[in-house]
Image 1 (cartoon, rainbow over the protein chains, first blue to last red):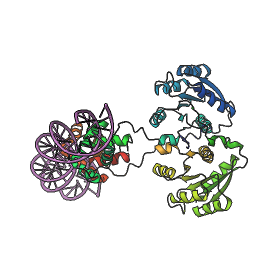
Image 2 (cartoon, each protein chain N blue to C red; image 1 turned 120 degrees about the vertical axis):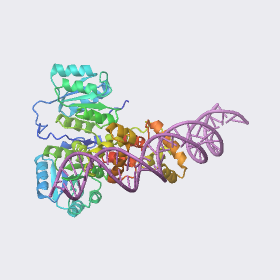
Image 3 (cartoon, helix red, strand yellow; image 1 turned 135 degrees about the vertical axis):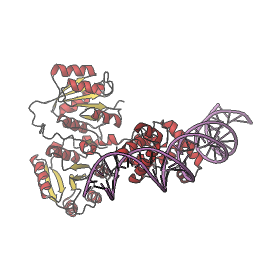
Image 4 (cartoon, chains in turn red, brown, cyan, purple; image 1 turned 90 degrees about the horizontal axis):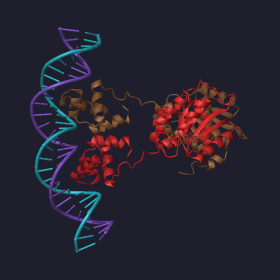
Length: 223
Length: 223
DNA sequence: AATCCGACTATCCTTTCGTATAAATAACCT
DNA sequence: AGGTTATTTATACGAAAGGATAGTCGGATT
């Protein structure tokens, strides 16, 4: 398992994190005590952070309002008050535009991508090792963007539509732009059979024709 | 969803990179003197690395054979002896499996992805700022994978086929799985006209039917 | 044994796609 | 003005796709 650091070119601003006068102020918002405590422990062991931890979004927003913006805010994606990525937007405003990252144990690559698109400074899966997490946090504090490569490489859930083996084979043919006749020849079946499979595929994938079915399959990485 | 933080073996070993007894040994292979010298200068300024620099792949392999494996090897993608990503494989063997990263000023996101798939520890565009590059190197030395987010966000070249404005509109319809009739209605044209455009699209995209054309368009991000 | 179900096949029919050929219009370039 | 190119429309035909209905077959269930 490897992790990747991703940068959004902001090299000129805030060049050296180590040379900061004040310690980093980090806000952790997660409804699991264990998670908050563990992250806080590791960060403080590095002597690099002053941690504030809360257990829901409202408390996080209040903390930012009360004590000024944090260098970095970590928001659990599944936490009271988050409401998907809307909580991210709220928090970003409350934190005066300083980096806000999403923390999650369950979210999908799709959500991670959306989070970055919505302005998150990064996405931190809870499966990340401690060292990597500390590094990730340090980078995000420096205004850069963190996204774990392996995590993103995960295929989108293949269980969107449950297709039979045959249907999958036919769908593969569709995605290669083959005709029913060609698919039939390849699979050693009759053309009518393929037509039937295409029909059921369209129903299962909610497509109105083969082209749309192929596009949906590609978009959802069903193959 | 308990064991939220998983402490794998990797985290316990080599926990703090700053506390290493021996300095990092890094090999830079690039045929541009300026690039080598600049990277070496920055790394040494951080007091964190012992740099060996060479100007082609053969010299890099020899260096690894002669003086033992390096903590990290940076290979220029465009350099005598590289031969695409084959040089990466050679170097990985010579470096006893220790991380080898690709360095390039010209490579595309496509190539970066291939490099990672081929086992590279990361991909470092030469457009990266000094601070980011140093950080990236530190990460890769720690056994993690580096990939710049912004760089990967670049769209694949759209100049694969040059389509007229109309053709692009029709292609968009194809990708939505619309019928010729529907596209014709949307664009306020006759169905025959759409047929013609679809035909020329198939020719330009080297597809044999609408479905394949749509898939090609999607794969190459033509829209 | 009876039955249910998934995969496959068969016929028939309508719609859509793909191709060819021909031609009109407008814009742009030299 | 002549030429090129993009865009459009028309007519026509064969191929492919899509839909409906019904029947076969093997395996699993009850």
